[in-house]
Length: 340
Image 1 (cartoon, rainbow, N blue to C red):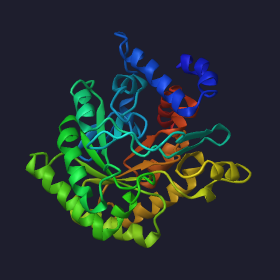
Image 2 (image 1 turned 30 degrees about the vertical axis):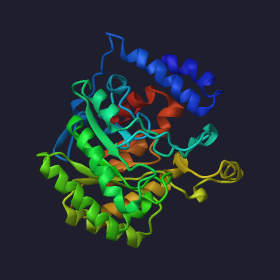
Image 3 (image 1 turned 90 degrees about the horizontal axis):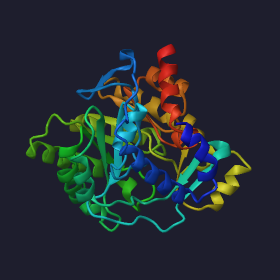
């Protein structure tokens, strides 16, 4: 943790994706350290959701560890769960670089990575060596070149390989960086997708494995209501809200002009906090307790996490705040939750 504080000025002078790759290279060396141990976490923080037991309500959101590369490190930092991915069935490079931008003064990240993935087969191989005692979720998406009409085939292909190696699966239909992906959130497209995935889960004898759906923060209230009803009726296990946003209005001037100049991509981090919470509260009201929800988007400290749990979320996830605050953030959030 002290090492990150020393390295942060260096990392933040580098291109963001280069810094990410360097941090992961260092992380792999840390994972090989035989004395790597997980911190003690109060039993009061334990949470049960989706039929699983989580040592804490704080997890790592999808998008950071796309290939299940650093699972021992995330466990050692004290995360209650880690969601790997997004994993696509076949390898793909993602969008051209530059595709990742940091705005530290606002705690904001813009990304248009585009589901860069080594493919489900490679990731499944790593999952066979995952550390014990860590809840791992697998976030799945379709390949860029796959037509919307054939999206179910992609999700099913990825599920067949990834599902046996994880504790739950999340379907990502809400990234703004794969053309047409968000169209799968429309009820008429979502219903057959969920039915097809649940059928495959049953065929594989994995009916007890939770299947979740991750939603965007840019949906109209009436669309959220319709999606909630489709999700509940389908029989899936829960929802995750929210993914990144396309709404540049969450960024105040003069920073907004700089963000817009970087081009397309989804925004995450502190400026997303209010919008994501508003969307989550709407979803929770519409759910009326019928499905659990994982809160994600704009969470950055113990107060944010406690607020999401008080709103009715079963669990929470962070990502962008970890980039700006470093590994010690996990312990600080746990300490804050214990004090509350």
